[in-house]
Image 1 (tube, rainbow, N blue to C red):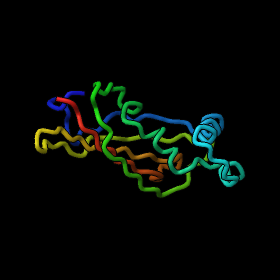
Image 2 (cartoon, one colour):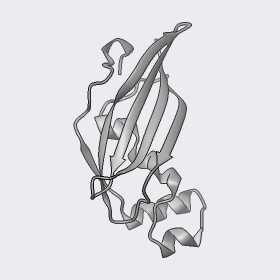
Image 3 (tube, rainbow, N blue to C red):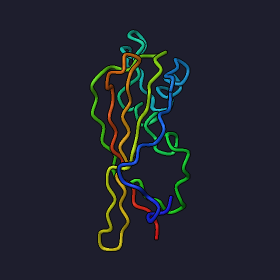
Length: 129
């Protein structure tokens, strides 16, 4: 992704992501989280949103070496359960050049199978020169 080529407000094609039991359990094991609620209620933990809102996964774009993941924020509206297939929609919300640093703010929205907004992620990256 080159800063000059980044287009603000242009939506990327929708993408589907299925939250599988195996993937959630592997994630929980990796972060050493044994909270029973996630297993009992078949829930994806909130931070699992970082898996399905990754910009590269949505767009297929490759981030250049030297790209810095500066910040990421989530807003949660609905619980995400194992077996759900989410619809992901994303676009670049903003880009700016501050003191020679190239900032890009990317927004990804995840909708559940009822087309209800479940999670919004905003990721700020700094692109290399």
